[in-house]
Image (cartoon, rainbow over all chains, first blue to last red; front, side, top):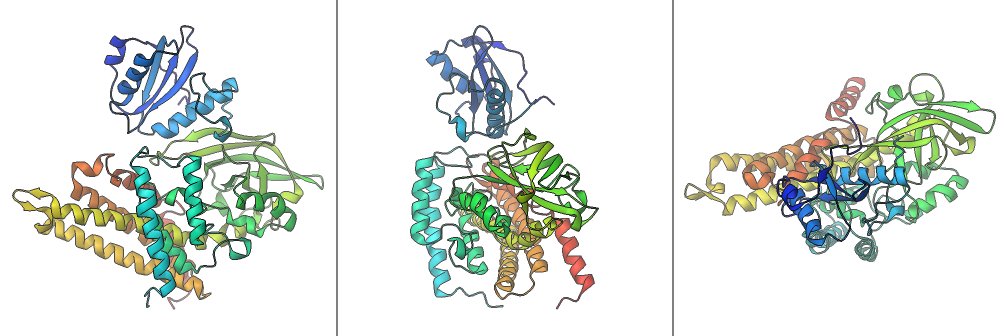
Length: 112
Length: 388
């Protein structure tokens, strides 16, 4: 089982997001070059789960999002932490739009 | 057995109960239902309050600055602290000091300076690396991580550890490795720093406990100074084991605390929820479930306090702590399950804490030694000696 989120990218648009499930889970946003710019989570306080979270970004649209992909999971908190740590391992930094996270407080994975 | 609380215990229980109800439960209204921490400012404010109560550092011995309380009092506090949504695994969001690696109290003076005191001050984070893919219940036999002496000054460690909490965030921790033959006397405890080459946290392990994860560690040619052996060479199992019986008592009490709260919720709900023109509480089927809850809780309470009291009196309490862990985890799980059933659909929704408790209580029947291993411990004592 891959620990990376390797689902196919989906075009970031009102129409595609309307078809997204309202389940809980994690998601990634990417720019036109399919570089990850945000790793997000739809937790149990999200009103419409993944769809609701993505719709918020659609309204904001301040980070030039072109694509998204997602994973439905009830372990959304631990999976979110894992995806952030994988990104940190790969790029030695967090995604550009994950601004409010403290890198030093995060765990360190060596995923090889 | 008389477990009537003395004046001091009554005061402490009352104080902690108010703290949970007034400071912790209101916080959870805004947190994710799976939250396992609060922000730094909130945490600091909570700690200020537990320090003012004189109860910060619950599991730290008094000579190192912890409160001078008996095991019975510690158990009563654990029962109270866990009575909120995150209470089973992060009672009061660690405002009472959180988990400590008690084994480090066995360290040499130099090791204490370097590793114990920074941990006690909260400056450094620590992990406990005992379990391996080959098993966690019987570490004396299951440990395959090897440590080979390299000259006089170093050891070289190789192996894999599994189910290790907090290793990805820790500054250092304890790794138990085989330095000798099979069995208990072949295991040695090493203090390992996580930024040393050869120490790799390779993955997060997702479980029912979705608030917090365990990790897997790969150790590859990790060089550890000889001076970082904790205790004696070959004495690792004793170090790991000595504190386990003691830690198992508040661990069991936390299961009881959550179950008490679930039961209270079920009683309250049964009085207001009506079906077919009458409250649930008027139905014999529900009444019997509540009675079974009550019996499960009372028996668990007596047994966990019995273990704590024997510990306080300096009597052997390994069997008692195994019984307490077994009964509190099994009874607690049943109580949460019945309480969930009484709540119907609401019971499984994340609106209420019951679904989180249900998932986490399921783990408690396995964590810190599965129920079957506790039975094995108890059986060994019964068969090896008498019940007296």
